Amino acid sequence: MVLGPTLIASLIFVYGFIILTGWLSLTESRLMPNYEFAGLVQYYELFGNERWWTSLKNLGIFGILFIGCSIVIGLFLAILLDQKIRAEGALRAIYLYPMALSFIVTGTAWKWMLNPSLGLEKVMHDWGWTSFTFDWLVNSDMAIYTVVIAGVWQSSGFVMALFLAGLRGIDDEIIKAAQVDGASLPTIYWRIVIPAMRPVFFSVLLILAHIAIKSFDLVIALTAGGPGNSSSVPAIFMYQFSFTRGQLGLGSASAMMMLATIVAVLVPLMYLETRSAKAMR
Amino acid sequence: MTPTPIRNNRLTLGRVVLYLLLVLFAVYYIVPLYVTLSTSFKSLDEIRSGNLLALPQVWQFDSWAKAWDSACTGVTCDGMQPFFWNSIKMVIPAVLISTFLGAFNGYVFAHWRFRGSEVLFAGLLVGCFIPFQVVILPMAQLLGSFGLANTTTGLVFVHVVYGTAFTTLFFRNYYIGVPEELIKAARIDGAGFFLIFRKIVLPISGPIFVVCIIWQFTQIWNDFLFGIVFASGDSQPITVGLNNLVNTSTGVKEYNVNMAAAVIAALPTLLVYLVAGRYFVRGLTAGAVKG
Image (cartoon, rainbow over all chains, first blue to last red; front, top):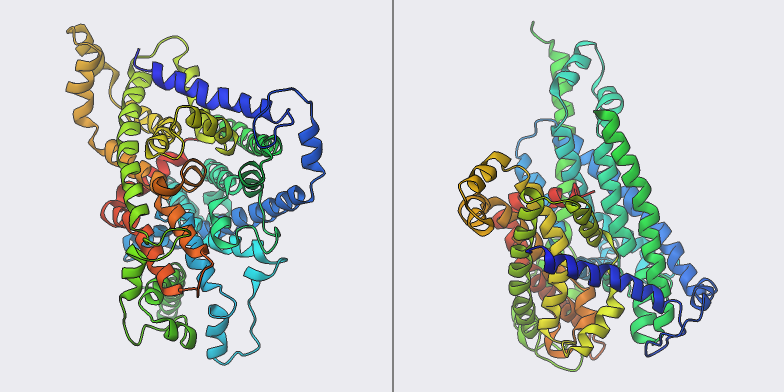
């Protein structure tokens, strides 16, 4: 059977490993795994850990702003590009190229641009705006927002491509009919086109939420979770506790919580998506 | 009907604003690339005294040479070059193996259905959605006990294991479009599983192979999590190398070298994007409909 190897691999390396990680999270494992059942101690410790709460809060801030801004910019660009634009191909290529980059490269480039002494701040000073300060990278209250800036830069073009594909899939006749009825262009988009793109919205939400919850490399490259651990996110928490602090049990518990978050976000979205797909038919 | 001049005028004004907005956004996406490139060609003095957005006054290429083979990335000072080759050695087998596995699996799921195959397919797709944090601890242990920890082979294995769910999805969705009658007719003529695959399915699979290879290449080249967890020293991929280089704290921060290294790390996927952007977009949107 040709499928065999893949199915067995999936059974072991996806399902089996999730169960193993789940089991590890119920033990007192530290540097070495220890498979003796210890109940929910790691989860109590996790939710008593201030750093975990910071990570969750940052995930919330990052997730909402990253998803919100990417959708607004992506949709706006898609609508602009849908107006029979000359050089559409070239513009689309420019908007989308960041998606080909690694988050580490994006983080490195933005870390340099946002450098508090030599980056954009200095540009403003050179241009005469001497009171301008932009120290978000080293400001523990603002560091997580730099991740939003770089993340939106990287992903909004991709969102544009998805929405543009959605717009192209809408029947021109409906729009023409609305125009004949005297509806203005903004009204047509707001009342007809955007509601017709419901499924695209679901896919976009799904993908962006997925990227947000898993975000690790971008934060590492930009702020490494700092200053202090002010811009830590769950993926960084998991990595640090599992691999640099030798707390396998706690690391596993945080990994299981990440899985739970993904399930909690994706399952309702998928449910709504299939329901709206059925309603369309 | 001829439109009145005023109305015509307003329309063109709208178009001007439209193009202006589009160009502004283009600038927004281009600036980081431009800054990265121009910084990489500046001397450190010019970086400190000059403007971030200015072009280099004196173009220098030393930072590129240094980024390639002598910049320090922690303990060693061999630049990005060893990491670059590590990534090449990892990405080629990983992409080829996961793509071919995906082609076979996709072919089975699309045309050799059996009881429960849809359920198995859905079960396989779960692998596309899990956060990899939830499998890396057992995987690290497994690789360790097989002596594959910190080897390129280990990395290839991990990328194949977790990449095949995506490649299977790509091929399955593509092969669903191949008419069932074609396969059935061949089966009646006595052609077997592999013969049909080779003679009928493979010859029409060109586009999906391109999409899949580009997608996998970008994913694996850009991966950081697996690289930093499962590799060390002489098997680390370029993303890890770049991160080490930027965060090496010895000596002065050489921003020009960092930027040259970032471009080196980005170059392969950017080239692929430039050459085959059309397929890249198709891959992204195909990966997107997976939901």
